[in-house]
Image 1 (cartoon, rainbow, N blue to C red):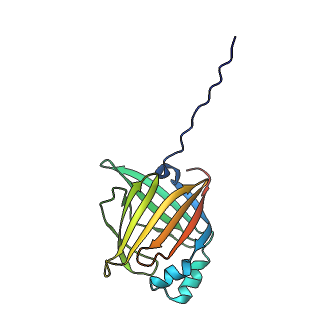
Image 2: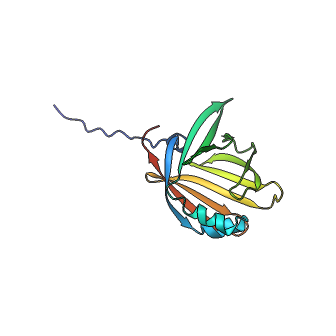
Length: 163
């Protein structure tokens, strides 16, 4: 009797499936302070924000009318902050407030295994930020770039347990 050698290919889960659950910020790279300064964040606030390595976020998803919607919640020491759900259709703008307290609108899309966000300030439509979320090994990398200057930073998140 001959033994057949079989190898099963295991597909990587889609990013939108992989990020569901809780993730912890493990590392930040790039020019985070310069990026925040461009957005008008005052220096004392920037100092506090720079020390948020270890911050935790939770993602949930829901299918509505054939479109996947994601909800991000920042898990804080004293309270949790849920952001407005966003559709991954690349068309629908969702209003929010950026870390500088400036009103913005965002639209998200899936693009080649990544999630891509375009963010525009409501009062200055020419101030555009691009956010890309992608897998890098066992981590999730979030790259944030100011489109006018190219100033950017990356945050690397590790999964915390199961869903």
